[in-house]
Length: 166
Image 1 (tube, rainbow, N blue to C red):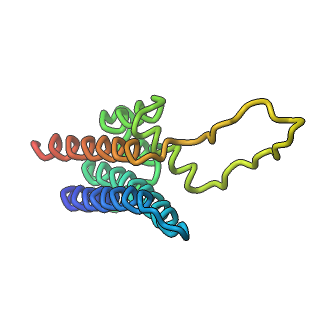
Image 2: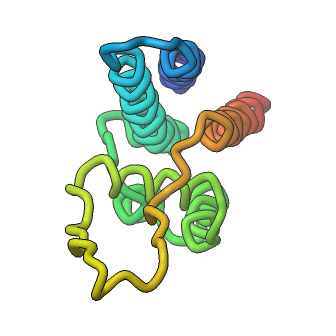
Image 3: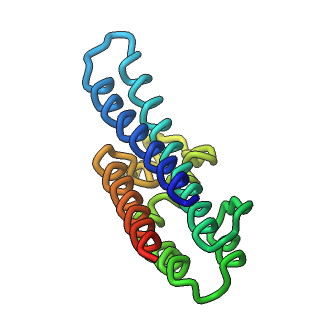
């Protein structure tokens, strides 16, 4: 049963990878009306959404591995409640969530960025300009997204393989 969830998760990640490749192609095109930049951003946001969907599928896959046949958890707290304290797979994810720079932490930042409007900026005038501030937020570069995608895929593959041996 968890094999089908693993396959669905892998499919979402493959589609996300395809969108990231398309994103870089679209943004590298010289297009006078900026449709290349728009298409690139659409592909990037679509890829992020697919990666976030894959993360939710990972939680469902874990629930199925632990005999929770109808559960579709959406958070670490929910999967922890379903599978009980001390579950090594869930504890590994909890530790990743606490670790800045981990793939799970990166996905948390991306999810927040996708579902909240950008912070309001102060207007710049000659009187209040002190330094140039860089946009804060998660790294949405193709390289960072691909790295997170690979890490999620590796975790899911390892989990599937480890539980498939039983």
